[in-house]
Image (cartoon, rainbow, N blue to C red; front, side):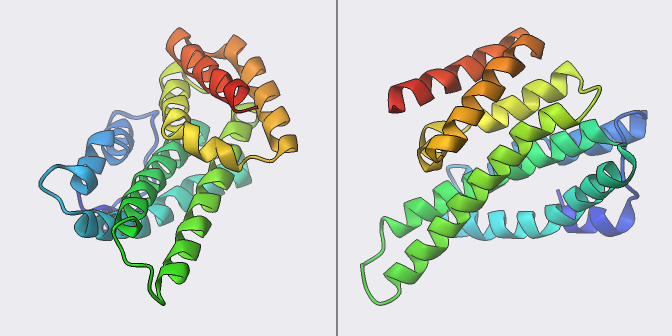
Length: 201
């Protein structure tokens, strides 16, 4: 899927219409990430595709964020695209980490390691932003709640190690509270994350 082309050719899609739903769901389909991590795709190519996809997707995400911030509309769309962007970032990060592990520790190693650390920090901040959005968006549908929680669960064992003590306490409180408003499968995933946080203490 050519995401950059969609930015220029299509208006902002909404899940409230049949065409808009098709647009949003196609754009955020997790199968799109197969282009980064399929068996026949090299790590270098996967990283390149991940960066390119992110460059194309971020302007779309920004449209939904602006729409929500200015008029409180398209909340479901903002949540879904935010969750997809987070999943894309995580997949790209894991590929970059895999690449770094194969590289010699020469003069460029620390620079690349710093870049990887900044990418991981960005993922952590995005995680917290999505988690907070559950309290800010009214009328989230169960399928979008689940889609977002599934994204947060991805690579959680690693990203959670970056949380400060204060962040960890607040995240546990939010997750525990959110469990009461989530569909069963999403509530189960939240519990898995809570269990991981408990084991890390």
